[in-house]
Image (cartoon, rainbow, N blue to C red; front, side, top):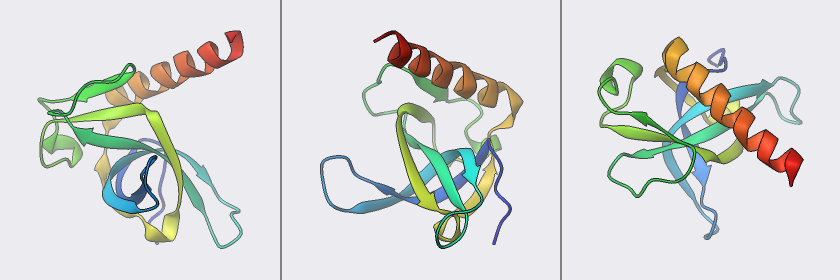
Amino acid sequence: MTDFRPGALARVPFPYVDKNRLSHRPAVVVAVVPDGPEGPLLWVLMVTSAENPRWPGDIDVIDNHAAVGLPAPSLIRTAKIATVAARDAEWRGDIGPDLWAAVCERLGRHAQAWQSA
């Protein structure tokens, strides 16, 4: 099994919100929970095509998509987070320190909005 770290790009079975099914897609690891009931768990953010409509909090991965392991220009969708088993994830790359800093900043904004609600 790969030793995932925050900032890793992985292919994971990501759950749909409105359907009872999964779609294998890229995702950004934001946390590793080492002691899940059947092994390590990953908290991951969905990555979607840059052709899709934007959501608040999306982060562009346009010009450098290939360098981080994405096949096409993409968006990191910070509003969509899921928990997946690490054993079901495939490592694809690393988003690098600049994108990771942007992810952390946006997640912090989401947390602050929740705290002030």
